[in-house]
Amino acid sequence: MATNTVVEEVLAALEQADTLEGINEAIFTLRGHFGVEHMVYHWVDSAGEQYGYGTYSLEWAARYQEQNYIRVDPVVIGCYQRFHPVDWKRLDWSSKAARALRAEAATYGLGNQGYSIPIRGPNGQFALFTVNTSCDDEEWAKFTEENRRELILIAHYFNQKALEFEPNKTPEQSQALSPREIDAMTLLAIGYNRAQVAETLSISEHTLRVYIESARFKLGAANTTHAVARALSRGLIVV
Image 1: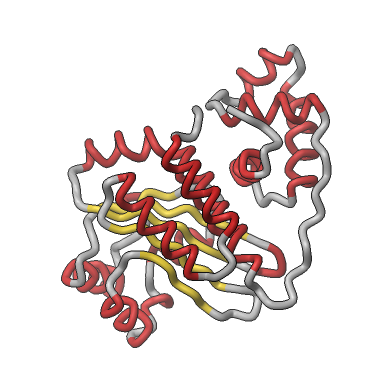
Image 2: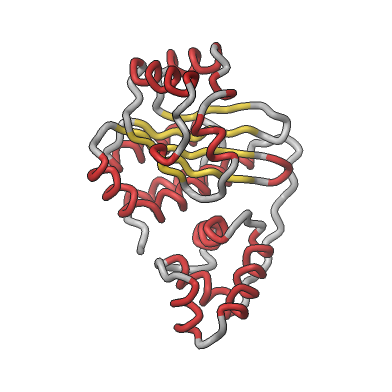
């Protein structure tokens, strides 16, 4: 699936940004493009410092920190335990604290639907990229299905930019992918499952796993989805 022109332009501008404010500008533009109420990038660096960029109100951000909601937030807790994107409906909101958090969040303008992408960087860095809005379940399922790949790509672009501003960061070493690794990453990026990729490349799934793991290691990725996003963002594959 090709990235549309608006997103390409925003990500190109983000790459050139030399201040953290550039992250916020990109988020506001993309929120309008996707037609959602909120879009947020939340970064915890290797020293444990937190940074938030997005469209939640300043009042809600202050209230969240004041109440130390990060301790009970099912989105943070759930995403820290996962590597793949998470629909908020699949998280555990059963505790009294979680229900209270969600009810109060609604009074500050947060919608009933959420989709968060966990991201892991070097030296213990952890981040979340979240899209939030109000709509029914059917409409939300359609939105996430149609935009999932693009949102994953965007999330990793934001994280890559944020890491540029982290003190004492270790520069990423870029290694070239082999032709077979490029083929495997490209087919995964356009939505093929592993069995389909193996069949298309006329190799066994075991051999495919070797290619995927090799590419993941070269890209410094936490998982296959992360590897695909990094390969896309660095122009190593084109879909």
